[in-house]
Amino acid sequence: MAFARKNAFGKMIKNLGRFTGLLAIIVVISLAGFSQASGKTTLRLSNGLAPGTFQNAKVLPSFAKEVQEGTDGRIIVELYPAGQLYRHIETADALHRGGVEMGFLSVNHWAGYNPVFGWNDYPFLVTDLDHFRQNEDKAFTIVDDLLEKIGAKLLAFVPYSSTCIVSKTLIERPEDVKGLRIRGISDPFFDAVKAWGGVPTAMRASEVYDALAKGTLTGAMTGWESVEKRKFYEAAGYVAGTTSPSIWGIFVNLNTWKGLPNDVRDIIEKAAKNASEMGFKGQRDIDEGSRKFLEKHGMTVKVFTPEEKVIWTKATKPAYDKYVERCTGKGYGGIANKVLEMFE
Image (cartoon, rainbow, N blue to C red):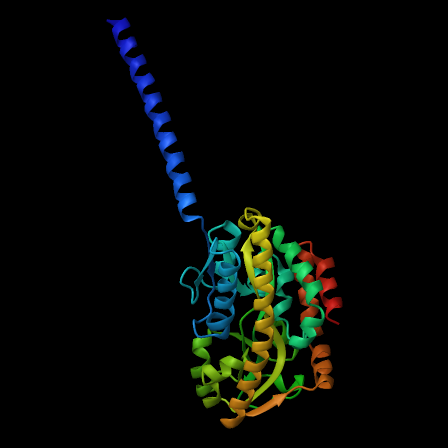
């Protein structure tokens, strides 16, 4: 009886092994057939900007089209704007984990992983798009090297709307900010407002209009385009800038990147470079268009001269010192100082 049970058990194991082996073969053949049939790799690109922005309406679709055409349809870049997959910082987290293949986000959105990335939000460190482009290659090397440590790669920088100060009182010099409640969105902005003698205030963009209208907020650091699109000109009479360019980028998960053939990488990098050129040219025109629009709608628009930017930069030095302090605390003080020297 024991022998019979043992023999039956042996036959079951043997048959199970045959079934498992057959199943494995079927799966392999099926996957191979699917791969050959499709011959495509899909890269999802996430970002939190609204669909109607220049970047989502023009730049990223152009990038996706060039990649698809350049690879004869082997690579499909699927665009997911407006937080359809992930919002801004969530996109950085997803790229880090491998939860999404590509993303479009601000350099500062990576600051949670390394405070060095915060340089992008410090007012008057980089004074405008031209100032940034003079140092773009050096900045690329620093950003890409740091990203590699957290499993991501920078393909190209692309700007968003440059930053300005919209306010209910005229702001021409740093001392004009003293005592004013100014909205910011990150530690670099808060550090700068404090350095100018103002009171930094954290607030969502959707709340700024009402706060300005009611007088509970004196000013806000935001983009030229946002002042126009969010109609802040109805609640405040003055706007001054540019305080800094807003530098974003096209990023890719590092493991995803390493898994692509070399010829595909070349095509994607070329498409990213072309998207970057389109972005810088187009954003300049958009910022200028917003300034003209705001003037037309009754705002006093103050454009800082190079000499005035020097004064603002000196007044913002305590904020830069805080930047170095934060980075030093994480072991990156040397790189932080290198960033400051780069943009001097």
